[in-house]
Image 1 (tube, rainbow, N blue to C red):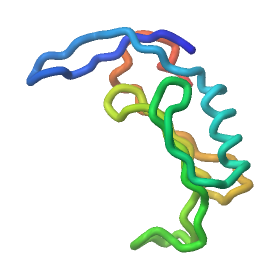
Image 2: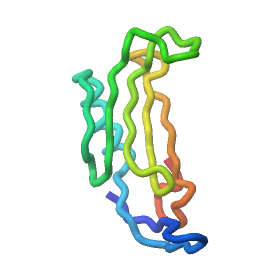
Image 3: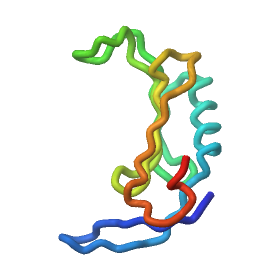
Amino acid sequence: MVTVKAKIKTHGRYTSVVPIVVPEFEEVRTFAAALHAKGQPWKGEALGWPAEYNPERPEPPLESKMTFTPADFCIGESGIWFFSLMWEQGRDAEPVEFLDDRNIVAGPTLVS
Protein backbone atom coordinates (compact mmCIF):
# COMPACT_ATOMS: atom_id res chain seq x y z
CA MET A 1 0.00 0.00 0.00
CA VAL A 2 1.12 3.53 -0.81
CA THR A 3 -0.11 6.86 0.53
CA VAL A 4 -0.76 9.52 -2.12
CA LYS A 5 -2.58 12.85 -2.21
CA ALA A 6 -5.81 13.20 -4.15
CA LYS A 7 -8.02 16.13 -5.14
CA ILE A 8 -11.58 15.48 -4.02
CA LYS A 9 -14.45 17.78 -4.93
CA THR A 10 -16.54 18.24 -1.83
CA HIS A 11 -19.05 21.04 -2.45
CA GLY A 12 -19.63 23.27 -5.43
CA ARG A 13 -16.24 24.55 -6.56
CA TYR A 14 -14.47 23.59 -3.35
CA THR A 15 -11.76 20.95 -3.70
CA SER A 16 -9.80 19.35 -0.88
CA VAL A 17 -6.42 17.64 -1.21
CA VAL A 18 -6.35 14.67 1.13
CA PRO A 19 -4.06 11.70 1.69
CA ILE A 20 -5.44 8.33 0.58
CA VAL A 21 -3.96 4.85 0.60
CA VAL A 22 -3.89 2.94 -2.69
CA PRO A 23 -2.63 -0.58 -3.31
CA GLU A 24 0.47 -1.38 -5.34
CA PHE A 25 -0.40 -2.40 -8.91
CA GLU A 26 1.08 -5.89 -8.41
CA GLU A 27 -1.20 -6.43 -5.39
CA VAL A 28 -4.21 -5.57 -7.53
CA ARG A 29 -3.05 -7.71 -10.47
CA THR A 30 -2.45 -10.70 -8.18
CA PHE A 31 -5.87 -10.34 -6.54
CA ALA A 32 -7.62 -9.97 -9.93
CA ALA A 33 -5.76 -12.96 -11.39
CA ALA A 34 -6.92 -15.15 -8.49
CA LEU A 35 -10.54 -14.15 -9.12
CA HIS A 36 -10.08 -14.66 -12.86
CA ALA A 37 -8.71 -18.18 -12.26
CA LYS A 38 -11.88 -19.06 -10.29
CA GLY A 39 -14.11 -17.57 -13.02
CA GLN A 40 -16.94 -16.69 -10.61
CA PRO A 41 -18.62 -13.29 -10.25
CA TRP A 42 -17.45 -11.39 -7.16
CA LYS A 43 -18.23 -8.02 -5.60
CA GLY A 44 -16.97 -6.59 -2.33
CA GLU A 45 -14.05 -4.74 -0.80
CA ALA A 46 -10.47 -5.50 -1.80
CA LEU A 47 -7.31 -3.83 -0.57
CA GLY A 48 -9.40 -1.12 1.08
CA TRP A 49 -11.46 -0.19 -2.00
CA PRO A 50 -14.77 -1.30 -3.56
CA ALA A 51 -14.09 -3.85 -6.28
CA GLU A 52 -15.78 -6.37 -8.54
CA TYR A 53 -15.01 -9.14 -11.01
CA ASN A 54 -17.26 -10.34 -13.84
CA PRO A 55 -16.30 -13.51 -15.72
CA GLU A 56 -16.30 -13.87 -19.49
CA ARG A 57 -19.68 -14.62 -21.07
CA PRO A 58 -20.29 -16.26 -24.46
CA GLU A 59 -22.82 -13.66 -25.63
CA PRO A 60 -21.45 -10.43 -27.15
CA PRO A 61 -22.13 -7.01 -25.60
CA LEU A 62 -25.09 -5.13 -27.07
CA GLU A 63 -24.29 -3.32 -30.32
CA SER A 64 -20.73 -4.64 -30.36
CA LYS A 65 -18.63 -6.39 -33.00
CA MET A 66 -17.07 -8.54 -30.25
CA THR A 67 -18.00 -12.21 -30.32
CA PHE A 68 -18.11 -12.54 -26.49
CA THR A 69 -18.30 -10.36 -23.40
CA PRO A 70 -14.81 -10.22 -21.88
CA ALA A 71 -14.07 -10.79 -18.21
CA ASP A 72 -13.37 -7.62 -16.28
CA PHE A 73 -12.14 -6.50 -12.87
CA CYS A 74 -12.30 -3.00 -11.39
CA ILE A 75 -11.25 -1.44 -8.13
CA GLY A 76 -11.52 2.07 -6.71
CA GLU A 77 -13.79 5.06 -6.99
CA SER A 78 -14.20 6.96 -10.24
CA GLY A 79 -12.95 10.50 -9.80
CA ILE A 80 -10.57 9.59 -6.98
CA TRP A 81 -8.52 6.52 -7.98
CA PHE A 82 -9.74 3.73 -10.26
CA PHE A 83 -7.97 0.79 -11.91
CA SER A 84 -9.45 -1.88 -14.17
CA LEU A 85 -8.43 -4.93 -16.14
CA MET A 86 -10.33 -6.40 -19.09
CA TRP A 87 -9.50 -9.67 -20.83
CA GLU A 88 -10.46 -8.33 -24.28
CA GLN A 89 -8.47 -10.92 -26.22
CA GLY A 90 -9.95 -13.89 -24.34
CA ARG A 91 -9.66 -15.72 -21.06
CA ASP A 92 -6.05 -16.84 -21.52
CA ALA A 93 -4.64 -13.56 -22.89
CA GLU A 94 -3.10 -10.75 -20.86
CA PRO A 95 -5.71 -8.20 -19.72
CA VAL A 96 -5.85 -4.64 -20.96
CA GLU A 97 -5.31 -2.19 -18.08
CA PHE A 98 -6.91 1.19 -17.48
CA LEU A 99 -5.91 3.64 -14.75
CA ASP A 100 -7.81 6.78 -13.80
CA ASP A 101 -5.47 8.73 -11.54
CA ARG A 102 -6.19 12.21 -12.88
CA ASN A 103 -7.04 13.43 -9.37
CA ILE A 104 -3.87 12.07 -7.78
CA VAL A 105 -1.65 15.10 -7.29
CA ALA A 106 1.32 13.51 -5.52
CA GLY A 107 2.58 9.98 -5.10
CA PRO A 108 3.96 6.94 -6.88
CA THR A 109 0.69 5.94 -8.61
CA LEU A 110 1.35 8.56 -11.30
CA VAL A 111 3.41 5.90 -13.12
CA SER A 112 1.98 2.40 -13.50
